[in-house]
Image 1: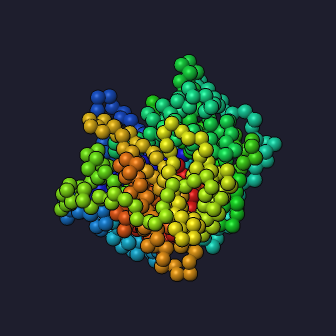
Image 2: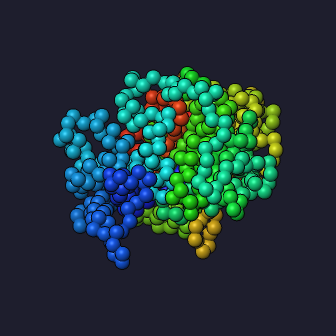
Image 3: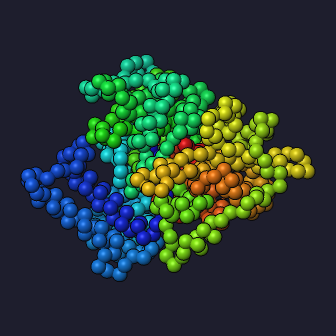
Length: 558
């Protein structure tokens, strides 16, 4: 499914973004209330001018933006400043209806209507924005609750009921004999295809579609660029199935206009191990977004999984849908700060200067950890054992086989472009492997910039350390900080511009010390046809990184 294209949050822009998001959600609510089940926005009814309804919507949107942004009142200078005090009661109601996650959290804490209103007035802009479905492509398709009500996923109300009332397990029993053996018909002019990614030409077609039409940030400044080498690695995991690479072509031209994929994965959710699919890379050509192909693609990949006896799935989306099992936040560590500033990825903090920022993010030329080296083939068994034990500490994690581990961390087939980097620490005295970390490469296209066309980003992948099993729990934080600092130095040596991370695993222990900045995007984790009580995602109720909320998510999705 579409990920979230995140960049470092700019406090000066966050208030405006929050207002835009709430206003956009309000507009979508109006469309639903007027009986527009397709989710398409209302259009003007008077030729040459706006209808009265449209003018009213614009007026309300403007007032809502001004209220959240603090226009005409005491200005909001920080995303953490109280902003709820500027909202009228009607605007509060619009905000809550647009943000089910926030509404559920406040309902659980409030002692009545007056208490709820008081808490609303103390909300910061960041808290208002947390949980809101971002604007941008596929939002109408993906966030159509009418569609998700027909799917075996838990509702918001179910997940808000509390952990003690949720029993982990499948939502719907699937009779494989009753599963359709053929796909549902598509719109006239389009046809289903199975993409053969062993064929370089077809792999390039998927690459072209994703490069031009996949996830962008909210301001359409950056777009993920998955290289053919990356796609080969990501879509051909052990046990991969050709018919889980689903495409839609235009019948007349044969052009690939939509794609979705799945790979098999063994996923442990608390004590239960699921044979499921990891669904990813849902992409629809920009000009066809109004055709509502996203739900059709989801239904088709589901059908193809069912045919193989796989009845559960895991997926991540930047948009809020019914209903996340967990939510993590993106964090970004600038390596080449000046370039990131030039392209609009990193802001210049108020009161600072370019030179100060360059100095702040400067990294040493050499690593610090004794015994640190690249992973070798003979390390695989030892590192796999270490990683397995490390991930057992998490509530949700992939169960790695040796074949899985080799594919993801130490691929035998070396691609044209290196995709993953893996390192171990070998104790100089005992010669035992004590630590392991990895990161992978994912570039982003810079849209419309005169000087730079790419940001080269490293994403923290999996890591593990024997220190986690020490009786002295306080040792884990300094050890991880040492390892991740070396990972940053190695990423700099490999010419990366930025190092990205989520708040999963034990990441909150090092994000602040290693100067990661909070991103403006979150990543919601979802389970399909499986109900599980919510898992912590490394962020507190204020959407800040927190070690108190670790231990939930141990699954890294590309």
